[in-house]
Length: 189
Ligand code: RP5
Image (tube, rainbow, N blue to C red; front, side, top):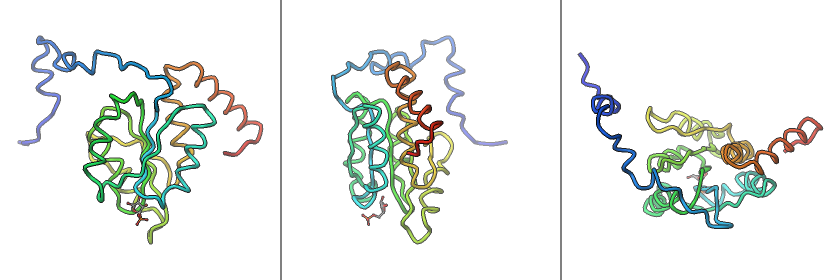
């Protein structure tokens, strides 16, 4: 006998009731697109993370994707992090990239507060060369996923963010195919 609660049990039991999620205004009302407003939020835990994470913002720029780069520490500025994560969707963002080092919880803390997909980039630079950040990012407990890149994988994080946008944006999709062609021709990002 287990006391584990399955969060989906309640939904299944009320299958004949209207889905409560359909009553959430933000779930049914498309977010109005503000021209030039950031579509991807790039969050870093410290200014010391910028050199690696800017490799990713360079890719977003190559794809012409408006983005916002912010330095917010989950443990030093938790209230600011909370505000950023909770307002990202209403500000028009489609996906978030979080890069941080050491035993950080930046990506997980953001993922806990938003329905937007969160891509985590564990950063090296610690005594453990980023293994600590890798584990704390990739080993998220069940229920709160973080799409975790390789250690220092800021470039791939940006490409994945672009691919998420490309699902609905043919212009970005075309740029991704061009980019893939450039890889075949020898370009190394
Ligand atoms: C993490 O601790 C940051 O993301 C950074 O990678 C690391 C060290 O931060 P600083 O002491 O350089 O601010 O939270």
